Length: 252
Image (tube, rainbow, N blue to C red; front, side):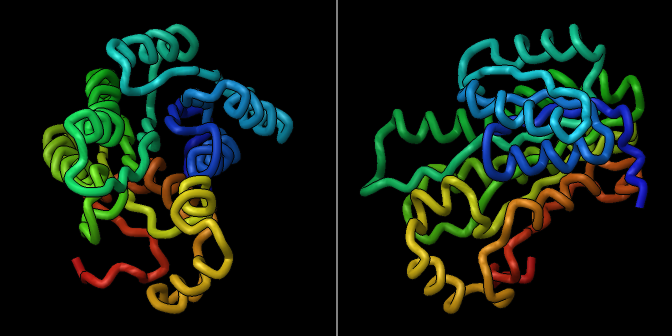
């Protein structure tokens, strides 16, 4: 299927490893021109080099902490200076924040800044141009909104889902769609090194929780991102689409 993405400009945040890098590679393979954003410049450069090595245009590398003041304006300036516009925003930067007890004010504030405010600011910076051109795709990689324990990232996930739904209704008539994808357990730095660092732990979790029978690979999610980025996905808007091998218990 031709996803009609050739020449479209996409920004992927959290693009240095894992899901972000995989998403960038899939979008490049579909012909997108890319900007990659993360904090670790060496890893970003490696992803950009790998994409260029596959014969695609080398992505622009933007080294930024998405929680800093003025971030969205700086990123918009770089992208507009290089490409003139942005068609696709992939808000992938974020992370789980489990904590003992009730957590501190600083921990809660940091989790909201990383998992909600940063993506909202980027979207609001680029939405006006998308509306003017009558095309735009905003895809937010979120996470669980089922609180199994005290985790400062869970409330921001819910906030993103609600904000994205509201934004989708505001901009849908202008050819802009806004969707969310909460990943399940997918091989990544966060899963493999922090949450489930041993094969035994991973195997036990799969047996108890995942009907698919395995932990997903980044490409299992990246293919959905590529499709939602496409003009062909024009009628999918304001949705929360779980990619988790069936692990989620709820039907809604």
